[in-house]
Amino acid sequence: MNLRLALLSLSLLPLIACTRQDNAAPADTATPATSETPAAPAEAAPAADAATTPAADAQPADAKPAEATPPPAASTPAANSGAALVPGQDYDEIKNGQPFDPLNGKIEVVEVFGFVCPACASFQPQLAAWKAKLPADVRFTYVPALFGSMWDDYAKAFYTAQALGIEEKSHDDLYRAIHMDQTLKGERGRDSLEDIAKFYAKYGVNPETFISTMNSFTIAGKTSKAKQFALRSQIQGTPSLIVNGKYLVKGTSRDDQLRIADQLIAQERASGSK
Image (tube, rainbow, N blue to C red):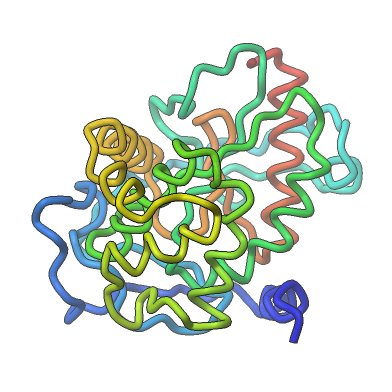
């Protein structure tokens, strides 16, 4: 079955929590997880459209609901048709939230994701189609989650591919390799760095160069920044959408999440928060 059709069909399933199992393998001590999530990844993933969440001992600050806001100025299709957003129901306001990167006149949308996460894989075709239609004043950024072990390995691989100029053309293919072709293990068992580098070799990168870049201080700095962003954004699972570092999207379905994101974008545009 075509990857896009297979994953998109899974995205029609209800949102179900996909939690890390308590008996998951311990994380690589050289790459600790954020204080919000323990340093071990999910050992078994439930339904493919489930939202992967950190362990039960993670204690993100709960965003307190505020009074419902009026409908924002609509400038995107989903915003034009959406009802007024309700804080605490449609989104959580992130206390002292900050964007991942300086806005520089843009409205930022971040997806916190994991290549090993089945829910992220099923969401990707729908998200990519939505991303392609975003207005010019919106900047979309992928930020990998670091929950320990293979999550951290693939977060490093993401930034390594980005540094070597091959991330965009390999992004969807890596999901396919893990979740459809199963030529990489993902959460089914930890892939070696050599296995990961071998995957990226098809894009013209020497495997030794890829591994040495993965282990560089530059990549360590990028993954540290990603961890800190997830921590202050009160991330409770993947995939998660955050607008301007201030709003963590909730919603009852993937379509609903994108509707909410569109309305938050319109709201930020109308308020001049760029």
